[in-house]
Structures are given as structure tokens and as C-alpha cells.
Image (tube, rainbow, N blue to C red; front, side, top):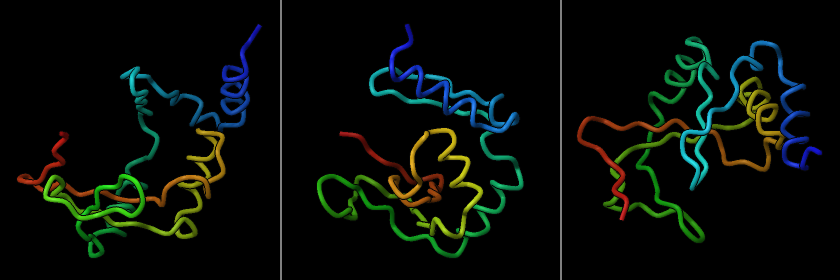
Length: 121
């Protein structure tokens, strides 16, 4: 008998387009669970995100409880984007995760220049 999580995964997978079905998430770390989805975005989609963010980067906050704060532990930059400006991206994420896009973080593009880092303590 399938457990609920497997059944939910199967239903979500069945709703994906054939192109997305080829891109199953691969578990690369169990604790915490980290997945990779190869070819989730094509080159044109990646280029669009990079170009859209190019002039809008700001210091990346470190988020814990409450609001994010700028910290010397994180020297990268980020650009937050509006969900409504990325409907196809949000649709793909929603189909993959089975979640309403409004329940996730805002889409964002991160930028790490050669000397930048996020130090884990």
C-alpha cells in the first residue's frame, strides 16, 4: 500500500508536462533533504532571470526568526522578484512541489562574486 506522501508525489508527477517528467528530483542529501532537478530551467529561462536581476541586486540578508538582517557572515547579493512577473516559472515550481506559489518564498536570484561567501557557523 502506498503511503500518503508517495501517493501525493505520484499525483504531482502525473500532472507534469512530459518535458518536466524527465526531470525527476534527485535526492543528493538526506538530512536535511536536498534535491536537484536537472534541466528544470532551459538556457533562455536562465538568461531571462539573470538579465531581469542584473541591475537590482542588494545585500543578501540572513534570515532566522523574524525579519532578515544583513550580516558579515553573508557577503553575497540577491534580487527578489515578483511572482506575477514570472508566471511560467511559478507554474513549473507549483507542479513540481504540489504547492500553491503563494505559500513559497519570493523568487530570487543570488549572486556570489569570487570573493563572496555565506559562512556557516
